[in-house]
Structures are given as structure tokens and as C-alpha cells.
Image (cartoon, helix red, strand yellow):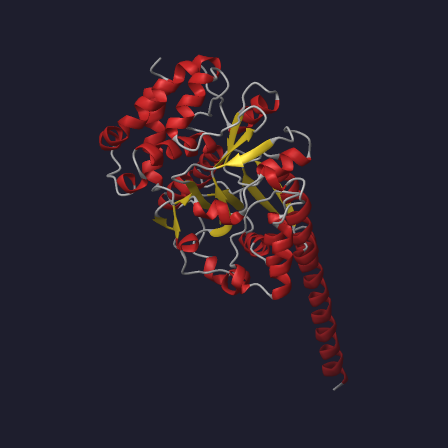
Length: 402
């Protein structure tokens, strides 16, 4: 009897030790949990928000260390492809993505999912049947990415130098001819440069004639030829006589900041506000859109198909979709990225906080357009495979045909 009792005590003691060891391992795993976020790192305001706001939030709420890895999306896709094909353990958890890049990644099975409908904040605060949750540049998302924010292409200009900002292709041509060397735009490989080209296409060709085009090089080239001829006619009057184009929007912004050009452009509608407040751009900077509209889209967060920490990645994305982070991200003093969350699903207090966040101080209000004005000039994006073809045609006809 005594032996049985002693054996029972030993078993209980052993079980208790095992539970303590397991709990210790589990706690250490939680303490050491890291999630990587790969994406464009060319804007310090964006980088600061990810590091200081989202990073702090996931640390406090999930005990996750968020490691931001700045990398151009084409390099991210190359890394994803290489790791998946060579059966390496993955190094990428979360990816900032949209458009043709998402289309390529999903088509080549580089993404984990579907996951969107499993996220608590997505189910509670987002329209999961709406366009931004279901389509990206004309193609179904299938739940493989989560809407993180919205963007609209705009022009930023120095109102002291540009008295009448061009609001269509014809008036831009007139301005460029009358002010040689004071305007340019990035290459089509840059997100803003590509959006500018599409803005010209919308104005000259028309969105309705483009949206259902057969995605073949010859077909697209034939339809957009009038816009290509227009862009070719601008070249002699551009910065550096059109012989050189800025490689990206960061270089274009530097030219504007240094006073070499009078108009810059961005896919961040409220960028001018923070640049003026930070005294990087002239206080006379204002924002404009074109009469027939400018491209508008949603940007997303996705997860690598071989992510080392899928569970942590889901928590980070769920956090990014929360009211707290959506309101913080929209803050005009920070990133100033328009939210993707559904306004009517927020509480009264949260709606009030978002309204306050999107209202600039009076002295800075003239530097940006209000959301109502932006909304009136939103044009949908073209299908991602059409965008890729347009970018290639621009390179062949404008960039390399000198």
C-alpha cells in the first residue's frame, strides 16, 4: 500500500515538473516571438509609424517583436520565389503588397491563405463582401490579403510658382512648354510614375476604353498610342530635356525639395501636409487632382506561403486592422494614410477620434484636399496584367527609344 502511494506521489511530482518545464518553454517561445514585415522602405514617415506605432502595439498586446525589413517589392517576390523553390526555411512573414505584385504572388502559390475571414477585426470592422476586400487591381483576392489602407494618386505643387495648376493633359502640356525643365515624372517601374502614366491614359484615352482591354502588348499599344504620342511630345520640355527620368518618387521629391522642379506627385494623398509641417517642403505647397480623376486603390498585407511564424503574422495583421491602428495610421502628423476600415462600423467615440485625426490645423489645411474632394475624383485601377503591359510599353516607346 505504501509502495503504491509512494509511486503515485512520484508520478504526480513528475507530472508537475513536466508542466512547469512545458510552461517555461511556452513562455520563452512567447517572449522570443518575432514577426518580420517586408515592404517598401522609401518613406521615413511610413517607417516611423510601423516601428513606433504598430511595433509598439503588437509588443504590448501580443508580446511580438515586429522586425521591419525594407525591400522593394520586386526583390521581395524574388526572395519568396527563391526560398520556396529551393525548399529553404522561409524568412518572410508579412508582406506589404498589392496590384500586379499580388497577382504574381498568388498565381505562383507564394502566399499563405485564405486567412482574411479568420481575423477578428476583419469580421467586426470591414466589409468583407466589398470591392477592397474581394478584388485587387481587377482580380479576386480570395482572402489571401487584408486591406490595410487606401491610396489616391495626387499632384503636389508650389502655389507660389505654379499659379494655375494643370488639371488635365492639355493644360499640363501648356505648362510644360511654357516652363521648360520644371516638370518631370518617375519611370514606369516606380509606383507613382506608373500611376501618372495611367492618369494621362484616363484623361486622353478614357478609363472605359481601357478597363476591359485584352491584355496583349499589341492590342494595348494600339489603344494607348494617342497618350504615348502626347508623352513623347512632352519630352523636350521636361527636366534634363527628357533624356533622364527620376528612378523613383523619392528622387522626384528631392528635386522638388531642392527647387529644381515645381510639381511632384505621390500615391499618398496627405503627404504634403507632413512635408510642409516638417519644413521639408515650401509652406506654399498645395495638392491637386485632375478633372477626370486619378487612380485610387487599396494596399494590403499578406503572408508568405512558407512564413516561419504564421500565427504571429496573423496577430500582426489583425492588429494592423484594428480601429486603434487604423486611426493612428491616418494621423495627419504621421503617415497620414487613408484608412480602409468601415467608418459606420466604428463606435461613436472611434468615429470622433478618426474625424479629429483627419482634420488638419487651420494653418496647414490649404496644403491638402479634404477627403470629400478626393472622393469625387477617384478612378478605379486597371487590371494588374494590363498595368504591367502599359509599364513595358512606356519603357519601349518613351524610355529606350531615344
